[in-house]
Length: 225
Image 1: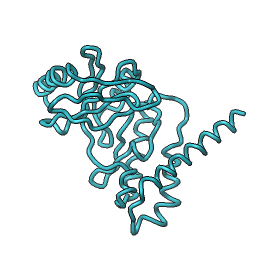
Image 2 (image 1 turned 45 degrees about the vertical axis):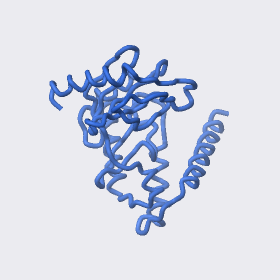
Image 3 (image 1 turned 135 degrees about the horizontal axis):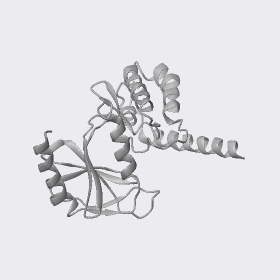
Image 4 (image 1 turned 30 degrees about the vertical axis):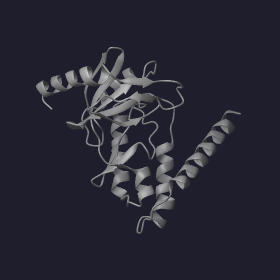
């Protein structure tokens, strides 16, 4: 996208998305609520801090809009500035504020999360894991701290691994989510599912995820007591 095209897209974002967007922020522990998506725009997803949108005429671009009162926009801008351009990450074309909405214009990542791959029974080759490992090492070399890297935040696109969400990469506290996921991949997925994958019901994965959270929280409490 050249400078002229970017300027035109920014005007489109501010005039048609942000001027009419209604985001609800009730509890920081819960995903934000998108009360209304303006015509021509599609909601790609809503997290605890922001909603991500794309326009029907610009499907390769995503716009991440932070909900009122939710922190993180400045940190995410800093993370993208450090990441720069890398094939395993999105790229920030523009970041600004308009009528109280803090937003980022990003290269849209398309693919299937590893979580969804398990549900659909799609093969996850070892090269995808290696790509993500390399991408996280790249981030560390730039003074970042990969955080909250789990099955819903990493994707497979054309057989390559990509990292979907880097908003927490300035957090310095240790995070073992990616190492734990790799252990599960090597000990469970590779011997039992890699050669002939079968769809796994989402309720099973949700049970595993809740069990993992319980074990992790118990171990943290045990270390602090």
